[in-house]
Length: 118
Image 1 (cartoon, helix red, strand yellow):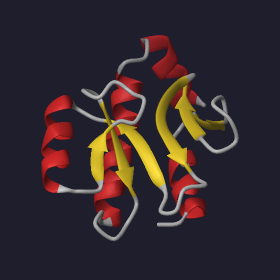
Image 2: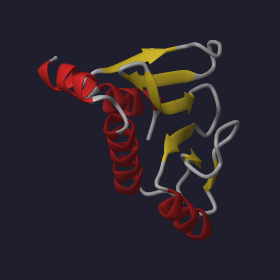
Image 3: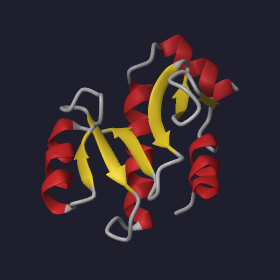
Image 4: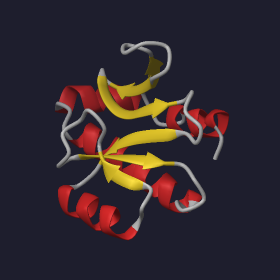
């Protein structure tokens, strides 16, 4: 998956915004000010860091060489995924959905309502 397709997929989520708080080489995708994805978009191959359920995170790391504990993140809750041929696109889409959902679930009721109305 190339960066343009990946960015469109991330921005398609309700309330999603792209920022560069860590410098120009790291695109951060947020919902209600909370990060759900960080893309090292200048890397070849691309790398994306996503929030994950801790049990699922461990499972994925043992089954995919391209999935490792989150780089500079809480390694229990975040995975960094190298977008090479070892990671199927449908799995990546599912992992993005999971990350977004976990972050939204942690928002206040008012923030969730604002996203759904926006």
